[in-house]
Image (cartoon, rainbow, N blue to C red; front, side, top):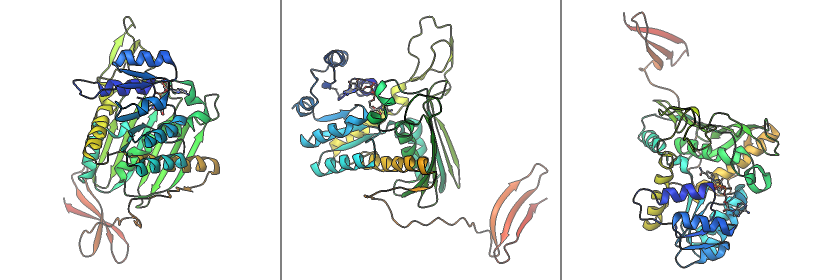
Length: 393
Ligand SMILES: NC(=O)c1ccc[n+]([C@@H]2O[C@H](COP(=O)([O-])OP(=O)(O)OC[C@H]3O[C@@H](n4cnc5c(N)ncnc54)[C@H](O)[C@@H]3O)[C@@H](O)[C@H]2O)c1
């Protein structure tokens, strides 16, 4: 494990969870006391303040990068150099260029590279994606994802140089990959329109943003992100298709509510702003946030010599979309997404919206009304006239 902070600990809890056979054997941290404390807490036999020494250690067969964003690339390059499989937290890079270099280094060295996009592994997301893939929602038209919380927990996130951006990079990366999964990873994201602003915090980067990501088949991805949302961590997705709809709420107010005066209450849930009054705890945070399913996929994929569901390529596509978001927020225009490497399909056209009713009409809508009518609204194929027809009185 590289990094003994917030996410390094979440990952270790997940990897060591239940009766898992997987172990974190080594820890790199910047400071000796942090490395020693993490090693003691998780039973690591190796700790060091020298990153390369940990990566190169013969007992290490997979490296987990849980470092600030500006250190991801250097860590991945060392993994490629020492031929160690690597899984990297989000965002993959601070921008598309960094991410592309990391992807190429991993692929050229032949090591396994997994992208730790946990929100594409939550139990609700996995079930929703299965339904979308089986066609329960028909053709996906719109996939929206929202992540909003009161802001990150460490200083480096708030520094644009180290973090690489604000809430678009930190939270939008999750949302973009969620929408991309629902719309279809082989459908090219072509352009974005983004609004971003620094509304609350004294920082250079944005603390609020909304964006539309247009896909080649006409589908729209949408994200809403904030580092100044009050009241906890809001993680919600909505998918709309020609045959159905899915709404997912992953975290806040999902059916577990508790009141306390605050006596005896410590940590409640990630980014919960209070530990007294009415609270919304999370039953099994590590699982509900997708970490368990994510590491299971990563480790099986590495062992079986296949790709994980989320790869360095996916991380690079997400970074490229984010680059276009930053550009659009400045120019206030739709901006193209620059993908020098694209492995999906080419040349999608917007799918037809015409539904046959009979030889003469297309169906617009069928409806049962409150006065007992069963009617259809039809479009005449030749004249273009739109008519209503009662099927029964
Ligand atoms: N849901 C998620 O997937 C998720 C959630 C939180 C964070 N993250 C990602 O994990 C990475 C680490 O974030 P975090 O929340 O654990 O941060 P953190 O500040 O809590 O921990 C970072 C750790 O990196 C190590 N470190 C080494 N060199 C450092 C340096 N020069 N400056 C600062 N720390 C240094 C330290 O051990 C430190 O504890 C980031 O890329 C972040 O985007 C992912």
